[in-house]
Length: 352
Ligand SMILES: NC(=O)c1ccc[n+]([C@@H]2O[C@H](COP(=O)([O-])OP(=O)(O)OC[C@H]3O[C@@H](n4cnc5c(N)ncnc54)[C@H](O)[C@@H]3O)[C@@H](O)[C@H]2O)c1
Image 1 (cartoon, rainbow, N blue to C red):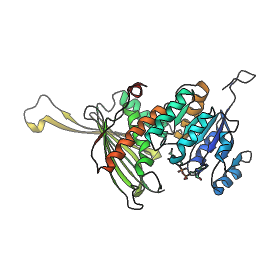
Image 2 (cartoon, rainbow, N blue to C red; image 1 turned 90 degrees about the vertical axis):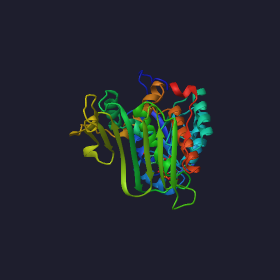
Image 3 (cartoon, rainbow, N blue to C red; image 1 turned 180 degrees about the horizontal axis):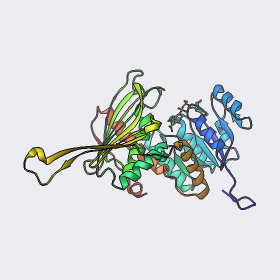
Image 4 (cartoon, rainbow, N blue to C red; image 1 turned 180 degrees about the vertical axis):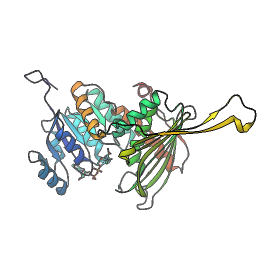
């Protein structure tokens, strides 16, 4: 980006591709951002275009993604179904644009690696919509864990289920688990080295509606993720069991997003009987005050800031690629009926 005549950076001009259930939210955020403007957007469906036209009278709305890619904009937001992410994001980078791609980055590991390489060589910002990495409650938990509040983390489990949109290419794990894999790995500061997944398809052959994913980290630490769009509950939660305390993050409960339980089992070194060796501790329950800022607004501002300062986003292409490696290994496990599969990361992805 170039400085304007008064020395200020002008707003980042953004083109949005895909105005469906999620893309319309991105259009809203980037349109109302102080440091961004959306002059052009597109969707293949007339219904989505008509809604955008009615809501944003100054917006150029088209059915042709090529018009957005070729427009005079600094960055492209890709909010189409994941099967089209690679072609659209790659075409955007080719035209010199920075790119925000919704999760999952792409559906194929090879394509993910190509995209990351292309962005790095072209010095373009590539950010993936791992929105949970921008959630104030996740930030709160990360600090709490980092300060030793929970003690050593033993294990975690996440639930992301509803009765909702059934996708026709990616299964429930590819659709939902990028949120949990990125959130848990961000919280822990590491990615799993082994995964296993089992699931089942009921509504469409070959596309699992429910998937149970297990991830193993170092030193006995493990995490479990339950994803489904065929479930009576609407739940987005994470439970973290630590040596000192336990935490529950419930994203669907704004009044009580985080609950800290001062519960645990203390191991006594000075004991006479085996019963005294382990002491149950059930202390107070604490509901901390957590910033109520909208994760989507924080995420979009982060992208704008990175486009302006040219630093790597928190959820950059490499982060997207790491999540993809976990998903690809989990898919392999799923297809083998749940056999654990190792996840390997090349050296350059281990350090950044
Ligand atoms: N961050 C989140 O919390 C979150 C939530 C939901 C969905 N998503 C992600 O957002 C993306 C979109 O999901 P959705 O739920 O909005 O899907 P959707 O099906 O509701 O919308 C996708 C839209 O893209 C349009 N489209 C498809 N190909 C196009 C093309 N080549 N050119 C122009 N328009 C095209 C379709 O017409 C449709 O309106 C997916 O990657 C999904 O995983 C993220």
